[in-house]
Length: 217
Image 1: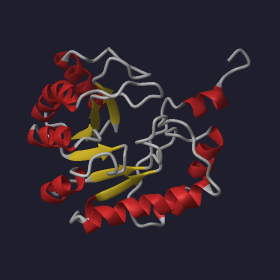
Image 2: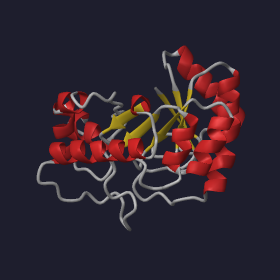
Image 3: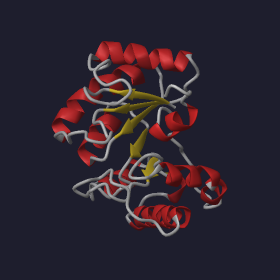
């Protein structure tokens, strides 16, 4: 999965792909480099990022989704908002990557039950808190993240979503310390054992940089 941030403030590439033509060209290049899916996001979720209006998010992502879909590329829409997801699906996106795990917008589950497309439920316990990236206390991060992801999946199924369309993501770096992230990585078999496909986003995360940094940082 190649990540394409159509934002002005994402930590890795913010501002580079606000132009739709440039973004589409980058997505095409990602596929040439080996990506099977291009994940398009219009709202940064980095620590300190400002939440934007969903209309702004929609205006950013729809031209890019249309352009990539027109190239025959499988497109994932990275959004917490049902209206953005609907517009992206109507423009050719084929799956929804929801960092809130379905908690940010109660309209998401009914939409995806109707659409019948894959839905990635990510774990982010404090997504709606005043300080969403502040790491909460965990007694057992692996057990709690696993249980909360299964709760999200159960809620989606109760809303009519086909369980065969659900994937889970432990949300590395989202309100978690480096120790939490490493514990989750070591325990990936426990997530796989849920029977749900697991998506993992670890690239460019701060906890990896701390491990891989040289003596000069």
